[in-house]
Length: 180
Image 1 (cartoon, rainbow, N blue to C red):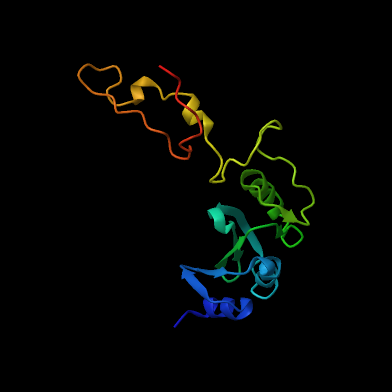
Image 2: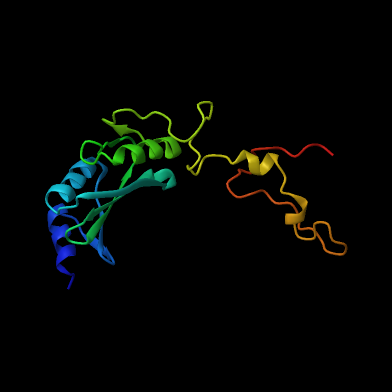
């Protein structure tokens, strides 16, 4: 039988919840995101906003994750949704979400409807793309070779170097090898 906190979260959000220690884990529809956060704040007493971020789920969209905490209950809610398009901003519910939504927008390209200003936070103005998306090509891994000493056998006689491989995250046809 789930402990009372998890049962309260399940009843308040009207979704099935999982358990992760003192946190309930709840998945909600993207259309219900803002209302679910508001319910956690108002009905469950989650008075502390801890963090918000995203996970690139590829073709399924972006998984938005927020961790909300009730100081009085010493319990929390890990609230998740998967969105293909924009998600409602929660900055009017938790002022601390402003920075997190800006970072998530910049790193993952998630738009937050109603956010007061999704201006750049961490990257230089000339930067193009969203570096934490799965489709972002890590060009520096292709263009700049790894230092020799970090390669097996680098600088030592008798040891063989491993065959060069395409680094993770770089598509096969991204950069052609120079003609030898």
